Image (cartoon, rainbow, N blue to C red; front, side, top):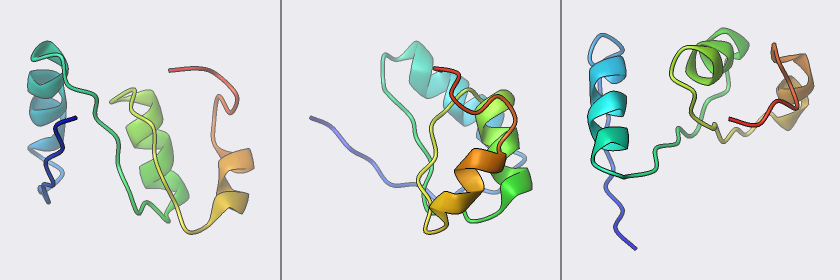
Length: 67
């Protein structure tokens, strides 16, 4: 298993995620504790998120939809 940790500014994230997915890597985001960021990562980037605030998961748009 290969794992790399990155901290990127949001302007680079869509390109970075696409590059990693194209290379066959799985991408996820953690520690996402903001509902707006959760929705953006889930809907725009189609990546799973990990959070310290699991109660926010039920409030996410499209909750329960597999990505």
